[in-house]
Amino acid sequence: MTSDSRELANTQYAYGQAAFERGSYREAVEFFEQAVKLAAASTALGGEIQTWLVNAYSAVGRDADAIALCQVLARHPDLDTRKQGKNLLYILQAPQLKRPTNWTIQIPDLNELSTDGAQNSGASSHSPVAKSKPRPRPKAKPPAIDPSQINTQDNGFLWAALAGVGLVLGGLLWLS
Image (cartoon, helix red, strand yellow):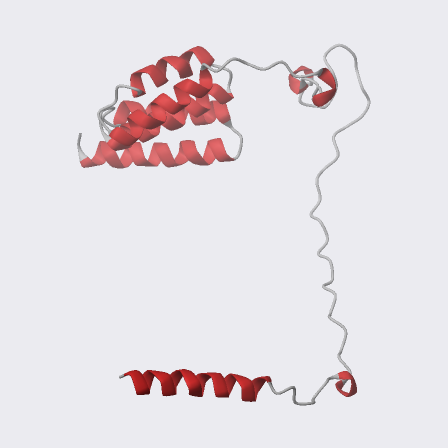
């Protein structure tokens, strides 16, 4: 693997991570797949990229691809990659628990909306609202403290602390 292809693989890998972290999973899959082609799959970097690719596959619903890649990673030469591959395979193959319907919220599929905001099944006169910048809030200043309310009497802590330090130092000198 040349240094140019390694750099390009690292670049595609970084783009894939950024896309994954902002929720663009399909885009992340494309970047990770390109990075895997450029990096040697048997290296630690190749294994790390493939681990991210497993997560991206799972995020876009390509569970069969994610499981297949985990099975490959479970035999990877790099020990850390092999452990992660086995752990991810265990998670992906775990049985799905049934949840009561009142534990979840159904989110409507927004793919049926056209670009102008109207639904495909019927027209709507509502146009999308342009996003505006939120106004900065003025920062509240802490209330001023009245100097007459401050307790300035000596509570003896300073003298007790100095006496403790003196005893410790005297003990150390006596023991040495």
